[in-house]
Length: 338
Image 1: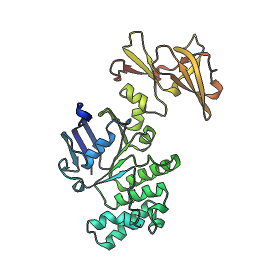
Image 2 (image 1 turned 90 degrees about the vertical axis):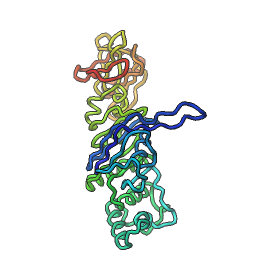
Image 3 (image 1 turned 180 degrees about the horizontal axis):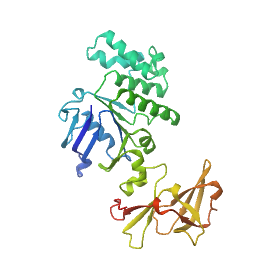
Image 4 (image 1 turned 120 degrees about the vertical axis):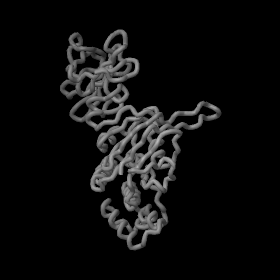
């Protein structure tokens, strides 16, 4: 089933008499019934609050949440038919893995034989069938997170909600689990809303990615569109393995030019479109990352270059790029202008 959020607003009381804090400004978001949408943004952007509103763990001041053809805004969490998986698997340490996976179904009164069948199918789908007789402390972090996914899977929910479920895992496990989650969602054909602060994870997982900042939804688009045509300077800086370089387009500061680090090349200091002093050069596999101080730029300019073109630290260098690689933003509010 689809998940539809319309005009959701959420505020929290300020501390010690301070003004209320707006966690979500009016937010509209759709997740198709077979779609994986990732919400990404920095800490405090409202990602988890949005997920908790959809799950029924927070009550919005305004707006509606629909799951399928039902308005669930006023329903308690247990009546919404969603499964929530968070960073902490929250397994019962004294129960076998099979009992952990089937706990919710048994609590709902599902016949034992049916629970056993569901547990076996979910464990097989997630590659933990051999661990059903073990206890949580005997499993790795990745295996425990698979148990949490299996527990959600046996519910056969209308939608899955995931709140940074991989953030406690190491890099290799995160990669494997991302593949598992995407494969599982495609096989189930169910709506999945996934929250993360990791933009690389967002681009790798999402059919579409929603960028949230300060409680405002800035852009929702497929990963490639977000990268190639960011709707604002914030999205341009936030999305990508390296932040986009932002350079003043003129003395008035009314326009800003954006260029990706991998689109920049060096040139003689007196011939480039910009020039600056090389502060440091970092190795990056077969390439290097040059940090360059350019007059007028608020941040260091990054250039991803082949090692054969690495500039000398302390030297003045020119920077050049093609017109087709330029993004233009309004200097006042950061909105895309071209």
